[in-house]
Amino acid sequence: MSRNIKLIYLMTFVRSLMFFGAVTIPYFTQLANVNFTQAFFTQSWFQFWIFLMEIPMGVVADKLGRKKSVAIGILLFGVDMFI
Image (cartoon, rainbow, N blue to C red; front, side):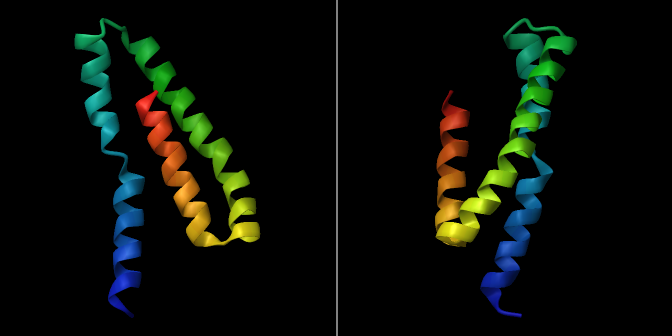
């Protein structure tokens, strides 16, 4: 297996771990003064949209190609993190 394919598998695995969840709960509860219910609702809402947007991106990948689909996904993720 080529090195690039191994790196793609590794990055997909690491991205799926979602390390930012461990940081957001203390941030929400201590710095933003949000209770656990509100913090978990926010996390659930974020996960819902990740799930919902994976299906259309599959269609985009079929039409435009995987590279453009990944680039659009990264761009949208960056916009989401900025907001």
